[in-house]
Image (cartoon, rainbow, N blue to C red):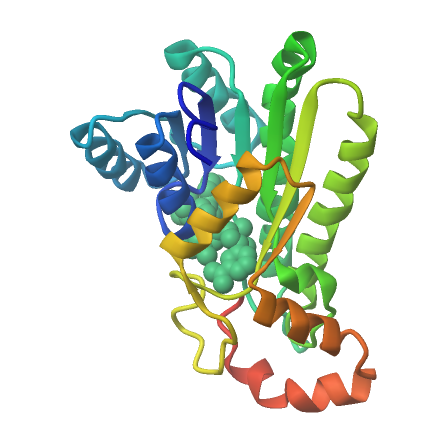
Length: 260
Ligand SMILES: NC(=O)c1ccc[n+]([C@@H]2O[C@H](COP(=O)([O-])OP(=O)(O)OC[C@H]3O[C@@H](n4cnc5c(N)ncnc54)[C@H](OP(=O)(O)O)[C@@H]3O)[C@@H](O)[C@H]2O)c1
C-alpha cells in the first residue's frame, strides 16, 4: 500500500465518525490530501485539526449527501483547495430496522436517499473530471448485508444491494475509460451504527482495522472487497437457508436491531 495514496486528492463522505473518520485519518497519514464530508461540521473540524497536527492535509466540506446540490458544492470546495479528485469514497450511510406495522416509511426513505442517492450524487460530482482526465477511482462502502434479504433489515439490505448493482454496472460501463470502481463490503464494524446491537456480531472489526483493510483493497484496485472472511463464510451459508429458517434465526434480532 505504501505510496499508493501519496499526493492524491481523496474525498471521504461520512468522515465525521466511524469507518469514514478512520479512512480519512489513515489516508492523510499516507500523504493524501483529504476532503472531509458529512453533516456535523464540528466533528469534521476536529478531525481536520487532528490531521493537520499530525502533518497531514485536510479540508472540511460539510454537506448532506442526500442533497445533490450540497454534495456537488462540497466536492467543489475540495477541488478548489486541492485540485481534481483522484479518489471518491462514498462511505456515508445510515441504518435502521425495517418495521411492519406501521411500516417505517421515513426510515426506509432515508436509507435509500443517503445510502443509494448519496453514492450517485457523490460520483456525479467527480465523474466529469475523471472522464476528462481519463483517470480516477470511485469507491462506495456497501455491506455484506447487501447479499442477504434479512427480515427486519429489508430496507437496509435493499439499499446496499442497489449500491452493489449500481457499481457493478458502472464498472463495466467505465471499462477502458481510465476510471476504476471498487465496492467495499464489510461485515460488522464497531461504530455508532452498531453500538446498540446486543446480539452476536461475528468477525466484529474495529473501525481502524476495517479502514486499514479497505485502503489495502483500494490500493490494489479491487473490484469488490468482501470482508472479513469469517463473516463472508456465514453470509455464504445464510444464502442457502430457506426463508423460514432465516426468519427463525432472526426472530429475536428483529425486535432489538439498531440497524447495520
Ligand atoms: N458499522 C458496521 O458494522 C457497518 C457494516 C457494513 C457497512 N457499514 C457501512 O459503513 C458506512 C459507515 O458507517 P459507520 O459504521 O462508520 O457508521 P457511523 O459511525 O454512524 O458513520 C456514518 C457516517 O455517515 C454520515 N452520514 C449519515 N448521513 C449522512 C448524510 N445525509 N449526509 C452526509 N453524511 C451522512 C455520518 O455523518 P453526519 O451524521 O455528521 O452527517 C457519519 O459520518 C455506512 O455506509 C454503513 O452502512 C457499516
